Length: 127
Image (cartoon, rainbow, N blue to C red; front, side):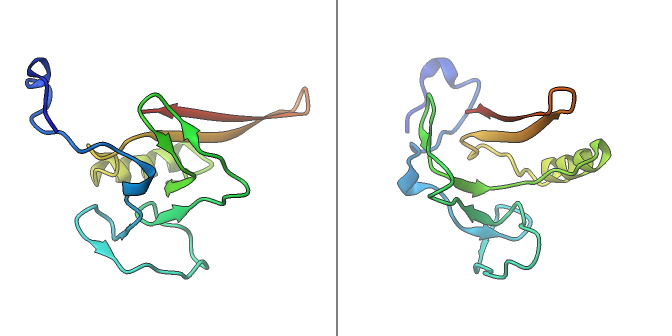
């Protein structure tokens, strides 16, 4: 790819275009350095370094401004408590879990309003 002259002071490199066909589905072991063999043992908690395939019947592709994203990806589940969530986020940040190859971040949550007895599903996306 070619970096426009006006962007050379922002970034010295760029990556090829993204598509669902060239998305990374490898598993990693605590960093993005080297892929590992897939582990099909579902008895343990999912690692944020292991690719999670989405369920075709329960999910849908997201069409964004810069690409179309299929279900699945690298999932980091945060804790129920603020301190636990900060601990997980800090660990992921120190290991560069979000890096220059991160194309989009999806934040999904369910909110409950006990006064109205109403659940709300919220999905926030940034590309």
